[in-house]
Length: 194
Image 1 (cartoon, one colour):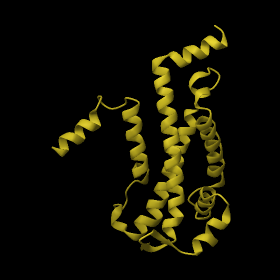
Image 2: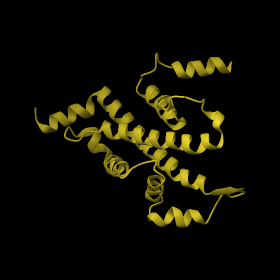
Image 3: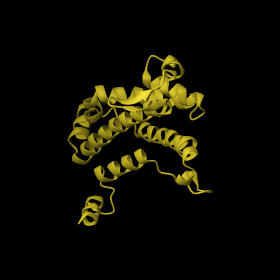
Image 4: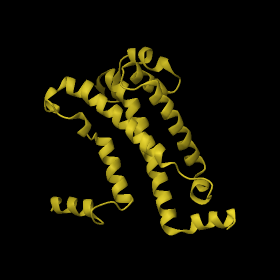
């Protein structure tokens, strides 16, 4: 079989095409959620209240966070590193995830149609794991520090499923057909609502 035939086979196979389209769109969605959540952490830390325009961010945010990098995302990652939430290896890993995200977002047809280019699911898994690490660290070090009753004493932190991770898991289960039965979550929601 020629390379062209292999690429057409990949592109035309309904299940392969569907899985690739869904996986790529969920990866890009997860990446955007990751960015928003990472940037939000130091903004929340340096928030001095709210007004009609939204949060009032302390001037220390500029000196303690934004001064670290011209990218708000990387500045936030460096702040999280300084706070011992993540390590340099996590930032290096994120660099490879971001590179793959950019390739997938800017050249989607290559990943959907060319047999020589495949979406790297491990990058997606690493992104979710890194988001979970940051979210759990934030919960334990800030939210529970403010409200100790949020987490029962002696709770196993390995069992914590942060909200963004739970949302992404639901999207994955529904989009990829991993529900106990088709429409399970939707039907359960509608039954509770009735």
